[in-house]
Length: 455
Image (cartoon, rainbow, N blue to C red; front, side, top):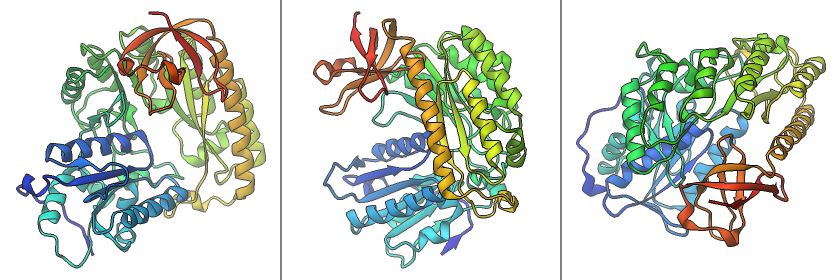
């Protein structure tokens, strides 16, 4: 049963939630993790506790992703697993896959409520209404058409992490040929700068030291309010108590020189950027309908390194998309090899129903996609290792995070080098503290530097 309606305002009976246990499962991006954490906090305020390992949950919340076909499969598997592990529980599915395939999700045995992108902003109201009137025969499923997705679900939460994730924007107007995210999350929209500053101040009051700015296309901030992203950055930089900010992902055409210069001299914005490239071939970038060419991207990297030589720069790359001939892939490899970047996030192209990329004739075989992915991942490993080695023997400030039992305690430097303390030296009192360390040799997996605390 698919209902194309908006949320009804209902009286929330908190007594119905008292003593209940919930479990949460998130797939996809940092934005999803931020939203799930906020949902969990809202339920906690109603008296719901988190189910521990081995405990049956009364409520299961799955926040889904649909960036690839593999992501869709993982969503279905996760839903079925949680239904199986928590028989009789109230299962809520939300997120991008729930928006795009609400009918399919509703057909999965055990699912109680499916909420699309518009409705998840009122998740607690929908859950309260459905929970207190449980006894219906059919799963309730809600979604809106893309043009009608207008709600914004605020989110500034850390869950069980040290860093807070602040949602500053949602939706996207770009409609790249391979992507379904605009259909899943709607058009670009945002809250006011004042409201985001207030959330950052609340995080500081709770003892937060670091905030990561998240969204779908955060550089597009301001479409709703007429404000500018650079003004948001300046306002957040003035929040007392927050020592560090990181910008999760920023489109190269929206990464202005003014923003780069400001971050280089700001109080709290770290020398750390994540910039999606997708391809180093202009031919492929045009097929993707990206908003820049390879030279513009290179210019942004040069600018960052000019004013922040120590900056960590992560780059998204898609391999095997339609139209990516061997010659185009070689262009991408050569382009990335000569750029002073730190790490590649490599994604194989996945066919998405309804996207215009399906009309592009040249198709890359799956085996070739895997080969290309491995080639770029190997390049990424070499670049990351070389970046880390530059800092062996130097001093740095690290924000440490609580370590799972028996695991090495870890944290990150200002420029996002992962640092580990041996398990024997793990000190719970270091959690959420910025500590001076001397950076030692690479760990055995070369994914971090060992460290010795000196102050």
